[in-house]
Amino acid sequence: MKTVLTNCVVVDCTGNPPMKGMSITIEDDRITELRTGESTSSTGDAERVLDLEGGYVLPGLWDVHAHLGDLIPDPKFLLETESPIDYAIRAGRNAMDALRAGFTGIRVVGEDHYADFAWKRAFDAGVFVGPRIFACGRALSITGGHGHGTLGAVEVDGPYEMRKAVREQLKHGADQIKLMVTGGVMTAGEGMDESQFLMDEIEAACEAAHQKGKRVCVHAWGAAGVKAAIRGGVDTVEHGLLDDEAVEMMVKNGVFYVPTLNGTQDEEQILGSGLPDFMVEKALGSAKAHLEGFRKALKAGVKIACGADTSTVAHYTLSEIEHLTKAGMTEMETLVAATRTSADLCGVVNQLGTIEKGKLADLIVLSANPLENISNVRKVKIVFKGGNLVDISPQEGLGDFWELFY
Image 1 (cartoon, rainbow, N blue to C red):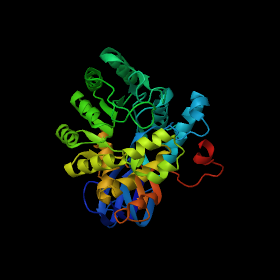
Image 2: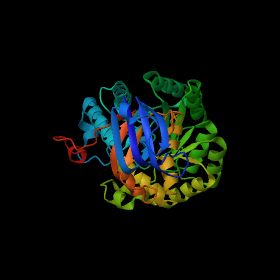
Image 3: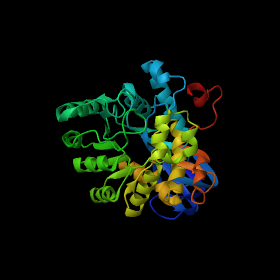
Image 4: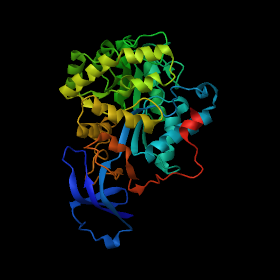
């Protein structure tokens, strides 16, 4: 199918300034032409011509730290009572809602029942229309470590068990491997600075994953754990209370950083969330160090990508985009983090993450300029995934996610 988008402003997220008065030609699933003014390809043979009336065209947005089936808080105790099938259905609904809000790419970094693999296959096959899923399968933690007993985390001790667990995720189709290297906010009885996996365990995970050409991402709050993970060979760090040495190591080793700022910086949301007191205390108690570390990473040129770590994906990732800007990124830097750098982290920047001739046509159209106000990413008019127009209109009879599950 041939689609021509006319009369638009293109923010291509390559680093170029916005380009006004543009036309974009899409043939099948790819962008085939970008030019100022009318397309050189006659619009007469296009099945679809859309006058965007000055709308802003961007690459589709990304969340590269998602848990589709998570619920924080979980007032209906669904994670304790629902069946694996109910869990999987809810996770898929979360992903499909995210696509309608403009998120065309999602990396899932720990999921129960291998639901992320099932939805990845379903979306890729066209069984349902959803975002592109990059799946880690089950996260790996030490016995009794962070995340044990939640989201299907596998408890692993020693390098031999680690290799086995990594290969198990790869067998199911993991795009990346997720390790819980330190303590965190959501698990009781541990500190966020507490290092958990030992060096030989981290090295074993990286060896097994890299042998198959797969990256390793790590939940790591404390700076000591971050540095141990980098020494062990990991590729991306999530969260991170970074010190100067950690930042220097990330730059030197080309390690990506997904800060998940909303988890500590959104005080109003944290206080009103209904989370247990110990979670609130840990989140707010680390807020200053988290922000300071993020700003060090930004100044040093660490590759920063966008992820929210909280469901629903659409709601919290839009909030995360706003927090990246509040924390010191320019609007353009934030958009690049949520598009090109996130696609790069997932190893697909040659196909996705920017608007360029030859790339897959994952696009969103906004009614207002996000470079003037980053919150304009909420004003989505049109979503394309692979050149296909996504129905983002309210669906009659569709229940509200929040009312259904919170």
